[in-house]
Amino acid sequence: MAQITLTTPIDDATIRSLHAGDEVLISGHLYTGRDAVHKYLAGGGALPGGVDLGGGIIYHCGPVVVEREVNGSRTFTVTAAGPTTSIREEPYQADLIAKYGIRAVIGKGGMGLKTLEACRTHGAVYLHAIGGAAQVYADCIQGVDDVYLEEFGSPEAIWSLRVVDFPAIVTMDAHGDSLHEVVQKDSLDRLKAALEV
Image (cartoon, rainbow, N blue to C red; front, side, top):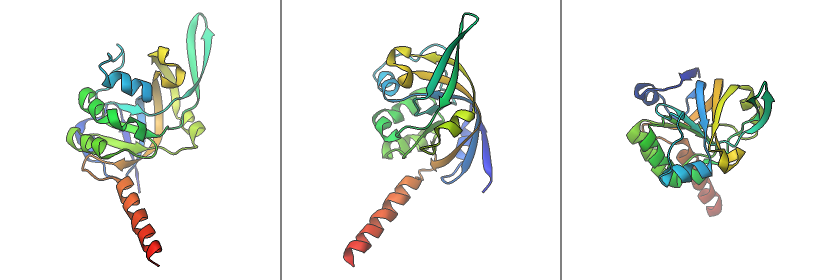
């Protein structure tokens, strides 16, 4: 299967052309966001100035970042950027997709029906990244533009990352299809069959 190139910001038509199972390569900007960010934004916290999620991608990731000072300025290098488990953001994700116009969410493990419905309604996808490939993903990061909400701690802050050819797989699409549901149903059917033997 050919890999589909996505460049941020992503429009509605492009997102709706994707289907569960498609492989994508992302270039442009990603914003990281984990538990603290999702809870803060869902609770009415203000999106920091400089962060524009419209047509963008939020990555469930707490990157490992090395900070240095060069000529009086802070510089950052991401040394590991693997996905974190997404289901923890299920209580918040649908509302944030609707409010901010997020086009894609990257993480691992999939999300629930509320997020799947938000993807269908608002034109978004869930992209599965591979756990254990933190250094591979770090190699796709060409630079860090800024960091926001540092008071939450480095893993929980919003990192603005520039990426090239960041690989992922569409596992929940804007048509209501979820590979996670398919795998879960197949697993339950196999378990039931095994127990009946």
